[in-house]
Length: 218
Image (tube, rainbow, N blue to C red):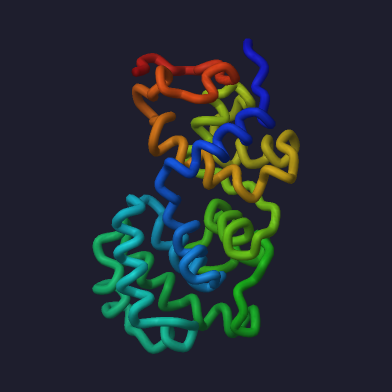
């Protein structure tokens, strides 16, 4: 087994990332610098391609800037604005409930901890971690399918679920990498380290990857 040098991997990917498309939630943060919109964009992005999420977010944000604006929209209006993101009917219901829950439980403010964020409608651990890391610039390990797959492919962790990967990374990965590791690995996973037949021939970090469970590659 090769040694998985996270310091080298992180620094190389940070340089490479300038050539990759920015993940959608980071794009929303760059454009708005608003945790509320980061939260909305993250909810919309679940099981949805980035391009579709960007368009849906733009349509929704053309109508809303804050909780009061969102509260005034009906579920049907929200559905129309966010269609065709994945599970748009469920997401429209979650978004409609969001202002009421935030005002009742958190005085109308977006909470800054994972434990509080997961109490919001439509928010799981992945979303909560992403909001903490991207929206509030605080250490949080956001593990989606890309992070789970790639960290196991490296051989850095040996886990079966994203939750197990998150718990393993919280113990093993230096806190200084928590905030940006998701963005870097998502971009890397979309461009080179794809689920099927990854571009190992082009990979800038191949020297630190054990290619676990890679059956075909390019």
